Image (spheres, rainbow, N blue to C red):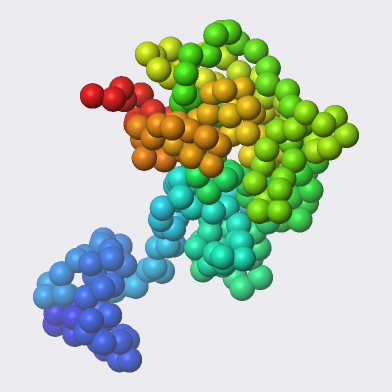
Length: 276
């Protein structure tokens, strides 16, 4: 008897296409050994088993960095929203990951937003998988205890090798973030920086958030006269990478179950390429 025949006898409701899919998917075992061909001969006393399907991979274009029972850390590409807006409700990092978590577990599986990245910014985001984990992480963000490090390619020559950017930020009716000199308006934002590389007409910076205001890095650098390359919303005149050149490269915090953890995402190769 061929393996196809045994499988059809064991699973009479399965189509021939399903049988082929099981075989190519390494789900069929004969006496504990994975078999990919249906025309192999099997004896009456051979043990034929169908294993469970593998869990679905992390949804593209996201990259899985870390997952455990409490948290999920992913690498988000540029061009993808973290959460829904009025214009885009379905294709977001949160929606893709929530559907993935549910597909692998039960209908009661949950995912919680802790923080976000701009659509144009790539890099690390952490999501919580329980209410307790969400509260733990959000408390750390509120206390400014989370390590958040970015790398940016900015226009012009930044004179000081390191320093701090301090400003108050406001949002207009279109939700665009800008700095203001009015001390009574907006909220304080602080970012520390150091120069990683100097180029002819640009500078590569490492930036550490002290506060975590929405859009603070982009607004502060533009106000300092060094908009991020590709950030036309904030006055950039160059776009060597075809994107906003800002990447969240490191994320560190105390795990909800204790102990400090840190995750890194390599800076995109394009950041290191020089024009021409």
